[in-house]
Image (cartoon, rainbow, N blue to C red; front, side, top):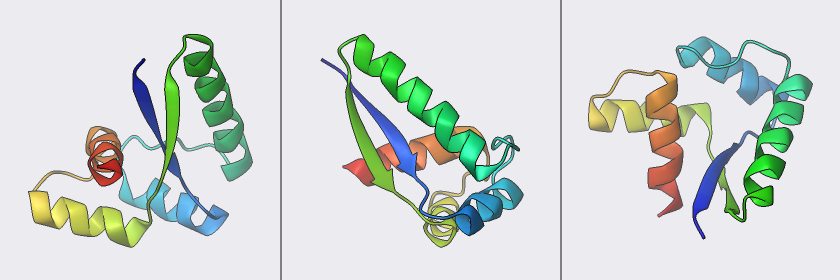
Length: 86
């Protein structure tokens, strides 16, 4: 069984900050984003994958980008979530 990592964005304000900060981050509303993420999680669960939610803030992501020298894009965002889970 594999583990799939998902960001737990705690507020609409953090979601909006990620929209400004992360290149290619979904431009939909916070509610729509949560709905889409729930659908993705249900799909992964149906394939017998474990789901792990990872708390992340815009400040933590900015610090991750500075520390690693990576661009603030969606690929780096997903990598930051995975790295933070460990």
